[in-house]
Length: 248
Image (cartoon, rainbow, N blue to C red):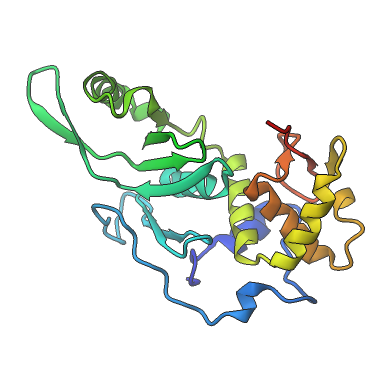
């Protein structure tokens, strides 16, 4: 089990037709620093790491160095998607419980799987469940929306229909890139992105850079930073189309 996830660099190599390559030249800030133990999760409850019925563990957020714990493969994959989302500013897994009154008049509590702060200062409370097991949870979330104005329409139920294998794969690849981030290369590519017109493949976009592996990693970092965005819906590879986001 590696320091960050225990599995995901190998998993990317297996499921992608373009294996991430190590940096053979140039320096990454990752290699300039002594390894530090990740900060503890801020979850209000920490799941047991061993379970016969579910996958449990943690992911280390590459920007904050903090553990994000999970209790299922869907939660794990969503954690990666949130890390890779340029609109997400902060992630809190297993936040403080929310109290509500059920249909029988009993006061109950519910702990969301994630609560996230977005770059527009709004918040989303996220419940994660397989699509076949959502019936009771949908009613619970409806009651919370009605009784807790603080949460309102920012309460969302996410299933495998949203947390797809492709999205999770792409998010893991971007998270991997953030761990290898070379700030000088990112800044150089950001300058190229500022003059970008229309869509191009990642391979074409980075073709002028002398260190192709480092440039590929930097391009993925720019996607995570919101300086570039995907222009197709295929698996994320060097052949993927990217473009500069529209200016607001």
